[in-house]
Each structure stands twice: as C-alpha cells, then as structure tokens.
Length: 51
Image (cartoon, rainbow, N blue to C red; front, side):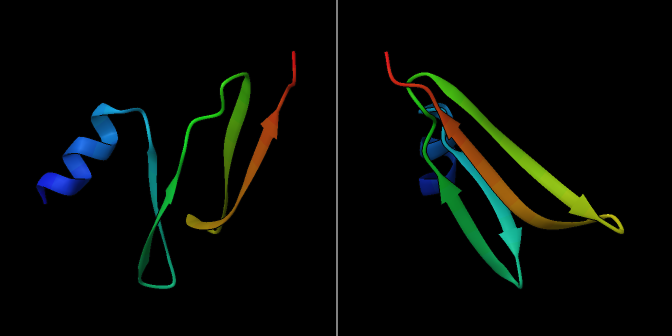
C-alpha cells in the first residue's frame, strides 16, 4: 500500500482496468486523459508535447 502512496506523491496516475491496477507516469509537457463508458474506465490517452 505504501508503494501506491509513493507513486501518487511523485505524480503518477493510477487506474484500474479488468481487475488490474495500471500506472501511468506524468508527461513533462502534455496531458493524460481518462475515458469512461457506462461508468467504467475504457482507455487512457497520453499526449506529450516536445519543446
């Protein structure tokens, strides 16, 4: 449980799909969008801008 707390403190995004917990690192410049269908997580879109 402390591992999840440490990841959240570092800005990582945690999500659950199909009974598994996924971890997405934050982009340096960009966005992460979570999409839901019928109240359930369906997919994640990561957009990163290079400067």
